[in-house]
Length: 165
Image 1 (cartoon, helix red, strand yellow):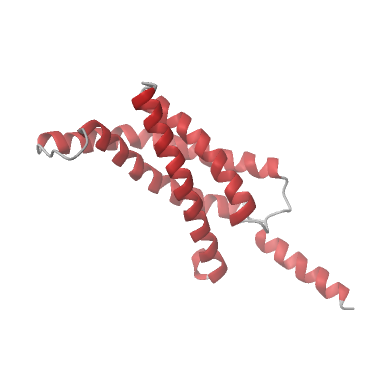
Image 2 (tube, helix red, strand yellow; image 1 turned 30 degrees about the vertical axis):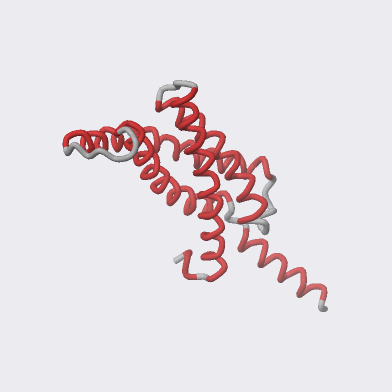
C-alpha cells in the first residue's frame, strides 16, 4: 500500500498540514461569505473552496512534493484542478445532505449549543465533506498529479550511476 513507505507517510502528513491550512482558509471564507456578505451556502462554499484549492496547490507543489518536477507546474495545476473539481462535486452533493441531517438532529432533539443550529450544521457538514474530499484528493493526486516522484528518483540514480563510470 502507498502509505507503507516512510517517505509516503511523511508526504501524507505534509498533505494533512496543507489541508488544515487550506481548511482554515475554506472555513473562514465560507463563514465570511455566508454571515457577512450573505451569500447562499452552496455559492459561499464553492467560492471558498476555489480559493482554498489554489492555496493548497501552491503549498503541495512547493513543500509536499518538491521532487515532482518532470511535469510543468501548469500541467500539474490542471490535473490538481480536475481532481478538485470532482472534489467540489462531492462537496456540493454532500454538504446540503449532511446539513439537513445535522440540523434535523439538533432541532428535533432540542440540542442547544453555544451557536445557532444553522451555524453548527453548516460547519459540521463542511467538516465531514472536507474529510471525504481530503481522502479523495490525497490518493488521486498522489497517483496521478504527483506520480512522477518515483520516476525522478530512478532517473536521478541512473544519472548518478552514469557519473560514476
